[in-house]
Image 1 (spheres, rainbow, N blue to C red):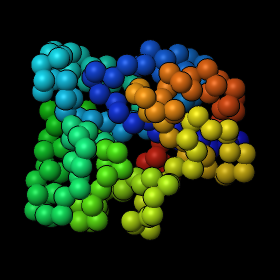
Image 2 (cartoon, one colour):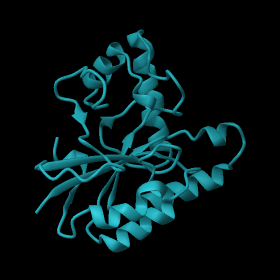
Image 3 (tube, rainbow, N blue to C red):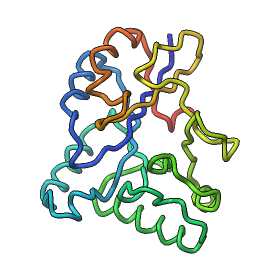
Image 4 (tube, rainbow, N blue to C red):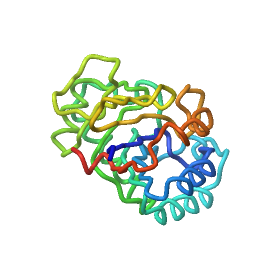
Length: 202
């Protein structure tokens, strides 16, 4: 039985493709999703969505016991965590965690920086706060114990990996966005797969 992690970036109230994720769950009843989540949706800041929609979304997320949430920055802005001042990073962590608490959305301490942009100093402070850092397989490793994916969802399924660590996006323009890989996943993923959360293997 193959052990498989599926992590998807950019969970937030304004994200699309949640319907596709629910359909995928119907096809794979034991599916588990590790969701890297943006706790402050920029669309709320700019008035494109209302707070009621955000709270409704958070309520729906809490009902999905097959989805586990991890911080994906604060508002997913470029260079958000390219910060060298450790005191500022301390303050950013407080803002990020408060945003999750305000949504009443439980999260595990696995952190992925937006666009993989993370300073060494920010990573060190996050680790001091108990976070595991998720890093890009295509960049030099910053920390030896980081979580690193070994399969991007648009690629052929890796047949030789004991633990397949899949990576994609809930929506967006990436080739591994769910709407682009949805149909292929139905035949790529083994029917007897044992799905795991990231937190279950680190």
